[in-house]
Length: 159
Image (cartoon, rainbow, N blue to C red; front, side):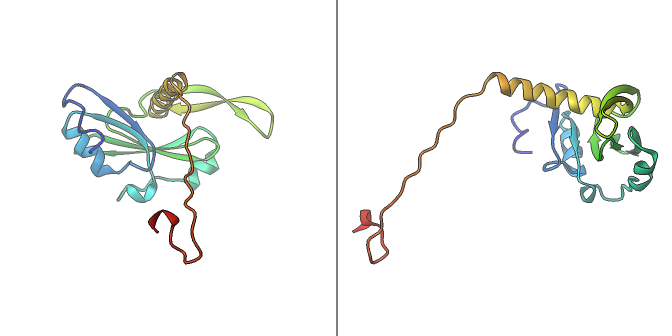
């Protein structure tokens, strides 16, 4: 909340984050301020949200499971591609399913996979951020400062 406190309320801002920040309470608080949210989530941070994983693995790439929280209109989607990914959003859902090309390592060919809208939205936001940061990289240099110690174990600058 501290990172988003500088954003003005109710101006349709969207925040894209990874699973380190995502929890339902954060999504609700941001939504109360009029700020939308999309992010990957850890299953343990989604209480009472039992998204399937074993059945998705059996169905194969492109399968997904959806849960909706009706009070605040928050959507949680678990999508299985090469592994399961859980996403939470306050504005994007799985409404339109897109067909995309994904690389299959085993067959060494491209295969068509279904992708829910929420996954495309998240990837679009993250890819946009990555492209912006790539344009404005600057060298970060650091220096190491060593302190020499005397035989007594105290730094020589304190003697």
